[in-house]
Length: 547
Ligand SMILES: Cc1cc2nc3c(=O)[nH]c(=O)nc-3n(C[C@H](O)[C@H](O)[C@H](O)COP(=O)(O)OP(=O)(O)OC[C@H]3O[C@@H](n4cnc5c(N)ncnc54)[C@H](O)[C@@H]3O)c2cc1C
Ligand code: SF4
Image (cartoon, rainbow, N blue to C red; front, side):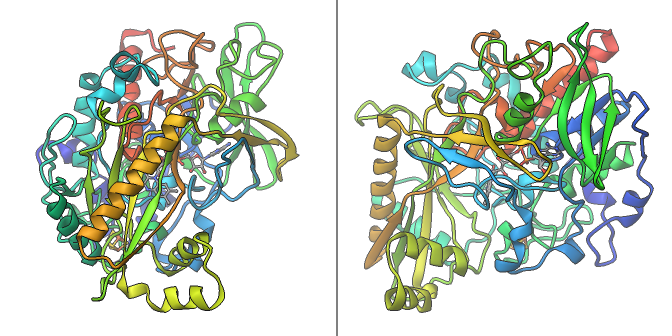
């Protein structure tokens, strides 16, 4: 893969001695003083924050990322065990409200260096070109202030850096992947068989899981613990893909540092740095520029909690846009029972998907669409699926002892952005004394029609593959939006470069900036948007216009 190593050496910086963490790199990491006015401080070191950090460290910036959670060590912190992995999630209190409240915790954001990608499944599809103009094409959602071709080069770079494995992708902007597809397990075989019987096109991938050795990163060993952190380091997350390279190029990653407020100069209206709490002490990091990348709930919450004389309703909230248009994908999950053993745990959960139903089809009674993917829950998550169906006691025990006979598919439905689906501040306070987020969510009729259609296709696929019983539960996945990019400050919080309309030296570079969510998993797009913003910042700095 020519050029990858020049751009991102992370995979070669990992140790080659059977351990999984480059302790030397962490010990020798550059450390800035709070009183240093660094070029950029980043809040949150997940999908968006880490890519920005790595790119700007390579451009020679003095840059630090502060993350509220720990600097994970896969050798000592992670276990291949569902129950033992709960510490990976952001489980601080949050209030949920609205007609269709979204449960928080293990199904949304992570806490710690690497962010939610530490426990994400590993699917890395691109958005389709149509996702960037849904208002123009379909009269719903919003048009992005940037186009698909502007993101394409960043998708291509990141697919090599993670790297991504999969079959040639026929949907959206058709493209190939740098690594060939993984072999599939029982669940993937069933999806492919059922889809083939119905004439539905399904493909293997795209997953950010190494298929063969990549630098010093070992290949996947197909044990299926991708959502528990991947102790092997085969699954890409910033902890192994972008952070080691950032450290090697002079960045600092400050773990266990909870940012409580962005400081704004009342005179100039510019950001001065961030207040944060570490080891029980309140501190302040000065910086010429601030970027927020704390995930769709925590980013709007931080902007709102940073209300000050210049921004009494929250930073960048002059037009009441902060926290609005928060989206979550409808993610119904359908399981089918087969006579023969499936053993869906014996492979990564992400294996096979179809995007055949992704765009608007005028023969259906809703706009936009959905994708379908293998999901392969481990036993505790399987018990939750069965219990959500209303099965308890003896029936639940029966379903559990039958676990090896079940296959499971999940849909991602493009629920539409709505202004009333938003984060505000609740009366309740967290352990730092800060108001927690109240996330209010209500589905619209289009959302409900999509989820129904997706359920019906998944049930058909499993039946066509030979399932004798199918059960479906309704759930959500993947929060994005809440500080969206837009053409102007009356319809969004940042511009197409991720720069705040209101504060010229404040950027937002995480999933919050997405104006629509498509029916694709969001991590690759979040990274691509951050990589593009980094390029523009580095170019602006050279031309003297970045801040
Ligand atoms: C179970 C599960 C499976 C998933 N599977 C997939 C998948 O297969 N494919 C895919 O594309 N996506 C998947 N996702 C979603 C994906 O991981 C997220 O969309 C993505 O990581 C979000 O990126 P981000 O940069 O917005 O935030 P994150 O990656 O969550 O990073 C935010 C970081 O900010 C830190 N932070 C927050 N607030 C503060 C603060 N005030 N001070 C300091 N630090 C702070 C947090 O600790 C965290 O580390 C999955 C998510 C879950 C929960
Ligand atoms: S199945 Fe592969 S990617 Fe998933 S946890 Fe195991 S080694 Fe990692």
